[in-house]
Length: 104
Image (cartoon, rainbow, N blue to C red):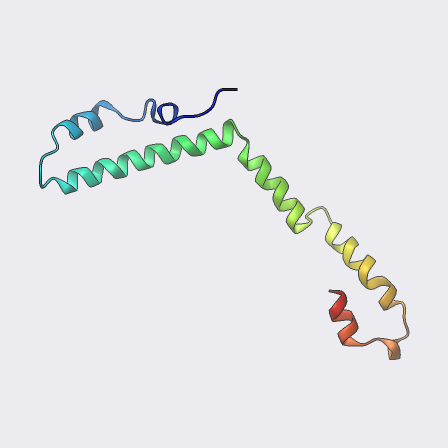
C-alpha cells in the first residue's frame, strides 16, 4: 500500500482562483488571506473526511467500537442479569441496597 503524504491530500484542492489570490496578495491584505485560509480549510476538511470514510472505513470502525463500548447487541442486559441474578434469588429480607449497588 502507498502511504499518504501532503501532496496526495492537497492534489486538486489549490484551485487557480486560490493561486491567483495568493500571487496578488499584498501587505495589508489580511482579509484576502483569511478568505484563502477558510477556503483551503473547507476543501481540505472535505477531502480528508472523504478519504477517511472511503479508504480507511472509519465509520465502520467507529460503529464497531460503539457496539463494543455500549454493548449494543443486548449484551448489557445479559451481563447485568448474570451479575445481579444470584443476588436477586435471595429472599426479600436478605436483599440489601449496598450489595445490589456494589454489583452494578
